[in-house]
Length: 305
Image (tube, one colour):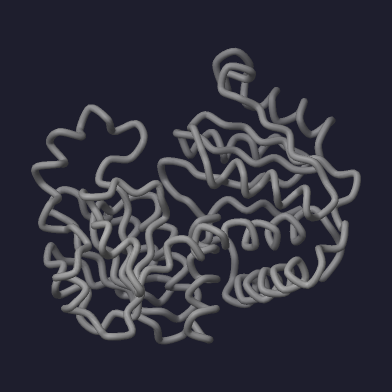
């Protein structure tokens, strides 16, 4: 049984297959609807963090594929507090055919997978966001027609999104530069891990250096959920890392802009760029649905294998 916990746990060929499956399922939906390959199946969705894209995209994906998604709020479970994670995993395994969890502590995802007898999907943790990364590379694949050799420039806070994106870039033959303020750069373990996968990250505190020659510029909020007490300090540190028209001019004419959303407009990205002709923010958001359909079908159905 497979889980979808980290991009690095999936091989290049497996990720290629997921991207192709996502493209197929998207075209199938646009041509009249998906086959009900998950008919009669239920995805249990555990949420510790609030969500727009993760909740709606998984819910709609299950609906399109003939199944059902069950939302479980933080108050209903109290993961690891009201009830042990091992017990939650085993109870849900008796009711559902898959579990998606959006959590703070990455150990909670690992523990769910350890005790679950059904596939577990990492819908986000403080360590990684593999579902987002798959939607990101799907978006780039659709736009450029290929992934190998493309350069992604990530500008801003090096976080869970950055980490999963770097793993995807490493697996899929892409190049990646990261510009973050000192003290907010990727941890050494991640840099070494993706190097072992074949990606030598170009890390600096210079956004102009990062975006030079980039096919895509990616950014995220300066203050993630759980870091609210740092928000005031971060607003002092990060303004030079804003993705704006001046920075975009330092890239290429064909460069596109990505953001995993929600965007704090006027902070990490300007309205001019977010709503401009080089923005792929909303096709990227829409692709969460199609990328996650591919994950669900791969884990919960024998179809398309």
